[in-house]
Image 1 (cartoon, rainbow, N blue to C red):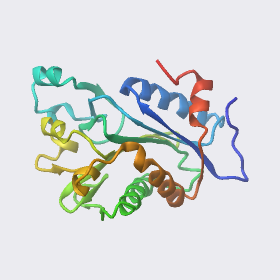
Image 2 (cartoon, one colour; image 1 turned 120 degrees about the vertical axis):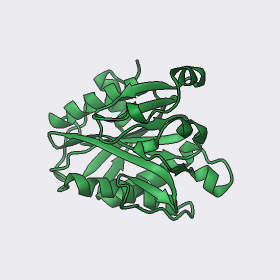
Image 3 (cartoon, one colour; image 1 turned 45 degrees about the vertical axis):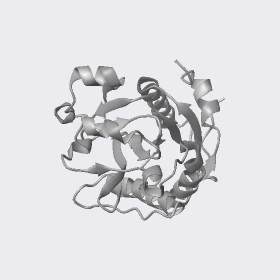
Length: 238
């Protein structure tokens, strides 16, 4: 059964689903958005990793893919259009991707405030690893450590419901970012938690900190019921 909304408990459902192809994750988001619009579920957060893929923004992005088609094929990197804002970005193993399905109106949030809260979630998470993250006003929609970018944020909102979200580099293959101008920025160094700490950190190891930071920042209580919900909707697997 789907999880009904409760006016007494501000909750969100979340689960980590492992490595999910981008196209399937997009279908999962679309089904969750519809269920959220219809009031069948509370807010939700999909947490996962993707096989290597470049996603372009709603209006731009292909021009910022600088590698040849042959190189992308050799590296096993797909290209997929998306409905989010911004330019091209990379998703791949070792990167924690989060897709919040939130009702902005019910949470009393505007779009810009929501984006800043997503950034705040990542900044709080990084602090648990002793890393000082920050926003860079010149390049909104992301989190940086010094002059290196560690997380990208790109969203889409329709009928007050959000989709897409953030991509945090944990132990990502950073070489793949050399094939694009990440987020349309031609001169940028991309980093990861593992690179900054000097040892490998598993994606699974950052999830408790992510959920704690998300709950605190948005004032919501987490319930690990999302996988059951996706099963009910019939979009847990392809």
